[in-house]
Length: 271
Image 1 (cartoon, helix red, strand yellow):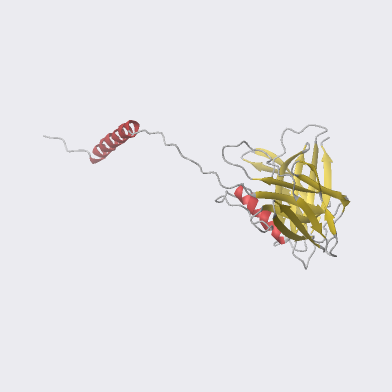
Image 2: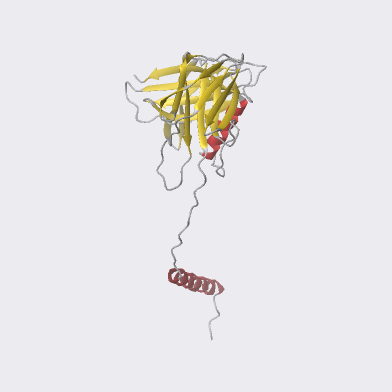
């Protein structure tokens, strides 16, 4: 008597034949595809800030570059850079090295609006930023979290958020003198509370004498949006989004940001 067919065995053999056929077709049709990336026109990039510290305020001006060029600071020289204060008085910047411009020592004042004008090749790029009220960074503490049976150490910033006003913050962490994390936060869920916010950078391979520094900045809403979108592009605070240039507060198509901010700094040394 003839044995009946096993449907499961027939299904496995059929799929095996299909897979082998597909592999042969793919290997025989292999072709190298040369993708040409068109270079976009170079855009002006302005990285500018003014703080409430008595120091030289810095503006960095560069241009974007093509895919084929190495990663670099594509400096732009010869720009005219002028800061206008709330009372209408102006301060001129001097170029101290290619693409780097600075003022004499001065400090910004909370509550004041500042306007920066950068004129280059007959075109002027303008941005304004209002320096928020100052919040003091009270302290830095270490926090440990266990994940998959491994303990990781992080640093937390501790401060008292003022109530009745919206506040936006920027945390810049330096480890052994190198910037390792740059993130922003807002007080939407912590308004008027005592805050202990963890900076999401794992502290590893630190030895006695190593230093950690945090620059705690109060920033305006437009500056917060800029750095928040920049962090999303880089995958900060979640999965990366489709790449796009963060919305600048400069006009005329310039990239970058002008950030009038307060600054409160704390340091710790590993013992």
